Length: 95
Image 1 (tube, rainbow, N blue to C red):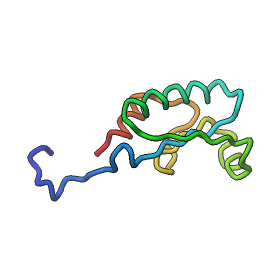
Image 2: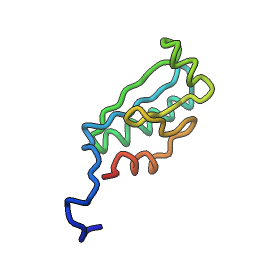
Image 3: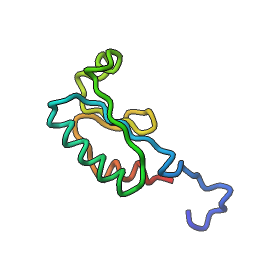
Image 4: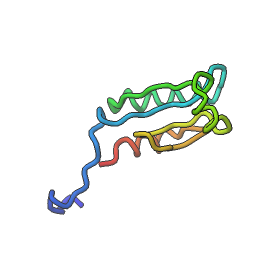
């Protein structure tokens, strides 16, 4: 792909234009583990992230309560239960 014309290369959003959302709840050890991975990867890549609590949002609770923690990347579900650091890093580094 290095020799492909720049006109045909697909460009993904810049890291600062991405958004990772962690959906979880207090007292969830898997959520704590997921947050540690997200903090590391997003910190390394300069990607903003946010944390959402299903106990404070009935819609999120209804949608995700059996899957937490859930990780969204740019509003699309990336994973649930366990976050793989390398997979998240690849997703956020894709250009």
